[in-house]
Structure formats: C-alpha cells, structure tokens
Image (cartoon, rainbow, N blue to C red):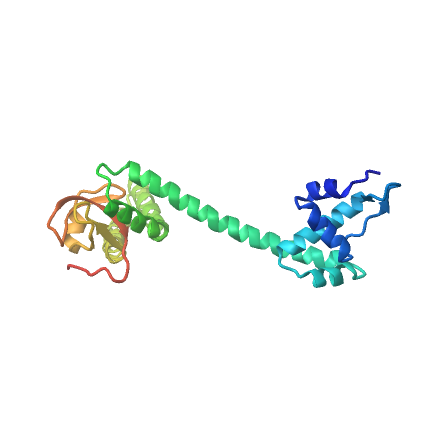
Length: 245
C-alpha cells in the first residue's frame, strides 16, 4: 500500500504543507504511521479523507463542523447529499454560462450581418435575440393550427377530382379565408419591426404590413419614426410598442 509524506499529500490535494499540518493539529487528519525518522506518513484512505476535508471547506463548512461530521458513524451519507447539492449547483451554473455563451454567439453572428457597425446595431441585435424564442413559439403555433386547414385543402381537391364533390372545396375556401384573416390579425398584434436607420421598434398599419414584400425575417415598410422606407427586421412585440393603425 502506498504511503505519502506531508508534502506529497499536500501536492495530491492541491493545498499547502502548512494546511496539512494545521488539519493534523486539529485532529482532522492524523497520519497512519510515523517513519523511523519521525516523518508523518499517510495512506490512501488518508488521501481520500483529506480530499473530503478540502471539499467541505470549499463549501464553507467550518473546521469544527467537519470534525463533528467525520466523527459520525456514517459520514458518507451526509457527504453524499452535499455532493448531490454541489453537483446540482454546478449544473445550474453551467447552464447559466451556456446561455451567456449562446447569447454571445448570436451577437457575433448578428454583427457579421451588419454592414455599418454601431452601438445601436448591438441594441437591435440584443432586442431581437431577447424575443427570438417568443417569435419562434408564435410561428410554431400558427403552423400547428394551419396544418388541419392545409389537410382539408388537399382532401377537398382530391374528392373534387375523383368524386366531383366541388362543394367541399368551397367549404375549405371559406374556412381558409376565415383562418387567413384571424391568423393575420393574431400575427399583427404580436410582431413589431426594427428600423435599420433610426433603430426604433415600431408597429406599421395592418394594411401596410399585410401587403408588404417580405422575407422570413424582414418586411419592407415605412418607419413611423423617421420615415425610412426599406426592409425592417421582424421581432416579437413588447407590450410598450405602440400601434400605428
């Protein structure tokens, strides 16, 4: 079985020799044996005990509390719970850091797409990223509700061709018209646009938005603040964005 000196166990556990000596004087880490020359020697079990002490100190457990804990009949049960709590805390910290990394990645990608970099450009990208998930959920919801309408369309066309049920297509046309109007109103209330010139978040008139040329993420509009006419970036509308209807 391996034996470790004070310096060796200190190196293994990432602490100073003085720290090991201090735990010895406090009775937390007593060496398994002494060499003929009087040197303290520690076993593998002592190393594990030292690592446990270091872990508990990192959790701000006092020296006295550590001594009481290690003197318990089954200290491993309490330490196991502490380990689980520490693991959960680290996982939360990792997830929070991952969100920050994702935000930074998104900001970098957004800046690459901006021809004229400015502080306002960062604000626009940050605003869009903040509401990106809300916009995605809204669009996904519209797709879910629009799927039955699309299915009805193909069923009505097939039955018209195969069985001459033309009236079913008329029913679909009525349903599709109502759905188009309601979904457009629903969409209009929940989106806003960022002007690339003055960086104002605004809502256009419904008629203008409905007929404007657009891409999946932009729409050609007239800014209600500066009058710029061009493609504006679509984002989810916050409650404080006023309508210009």
